[in-house]
Structure formats: C-alpha cells, structure tokens
Image 1 (cartoon, rainbow, N blue to C red):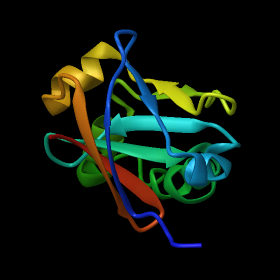
Image 2: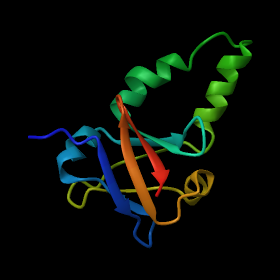
Image 3: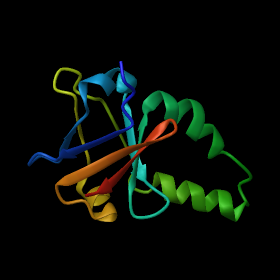
Image 4: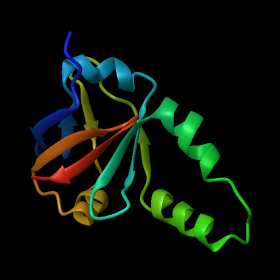
Length: 119
C-alpha cells in the first residue's frame, strides 16, 4: 500500500475535515490541532502530541524562547476524537481564521505531524 503524505479536502458546513480512510488508524488515539510556526496549522495524533511534543514544551520557566514556543502551540490548541466511521475532525473557527482557511485545505505530512494550509 502506498504511503499517503499529501491530500486535499473541502471542509463541510460544520468545519469538519475528512481524513482519508488510509490515515484514520494514525489518529485513533485522538487529534490535536494547533497553530503552526507561520500562518498554517499543525495536526498531530494525540499519541505524538503527548509522547513527543508535550515533553519538549517543558523547560526552564524563565527561558523566553521556551515561553514563546508554549504560547505558539497552546494558543487555541484543541484536542478531540476522530469519528472513525466517517473519518472527520472538527476544526475551530479561530484556528481556521489564523491560517486563512475558508473551505479548501491542503494537508502535507511533515514527519510525524501534518501541516494544514489554505488551498
């Protein structure tokens, strides 16, 4: 089976993104959507967030760079479950606004997470 590392979708009228069937198992643990480094979003499986991202956001309480990373990734962060039957996740409007996403989304795998950008 081919590895999927790119897909395009349209949001439905309830701001739901349909994840391709071949990728749904990846998100069985849950999903986390955050702001990206620039005007795009990051989509993580809950497992990757808890095992790899969260530990890296812990650091010296007085480290300004660490504080900035925490603010960047925690502002507007949402956690949720994927509807495994339909394969949908809901993305909050404030995150869509941040990324300039109206209806059309391009998703690109960036290692262990996905970058969501406006088409």
